[in-house]
Image (cartoon, rainbow, N blue to C red; front, side, top):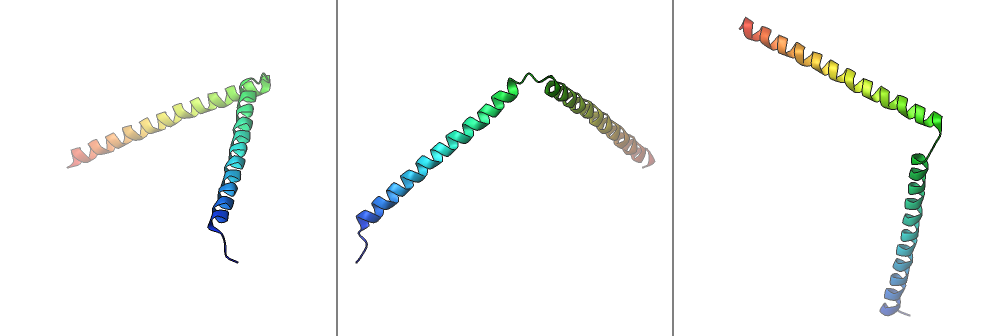
Length: 89
């Protein structure tokens, strides 16, 4: 009662084929679902959603400007401290 190598290879091949087919269907389903959600967001005409997105964009831009101002202040302070040390030496 030994295993026939041909049957084992055939069983593995069929199993692998079923798994690949299942993976392909699952991938197509999730890709289609993600794409549908993306299209729904793009074609959304909800004025509240658009207003919220506009506010979020404004907040992000304002934050970027403020971060740039802070970093410019740090560069200025660093330069002043460097000049002070070179004058003291």
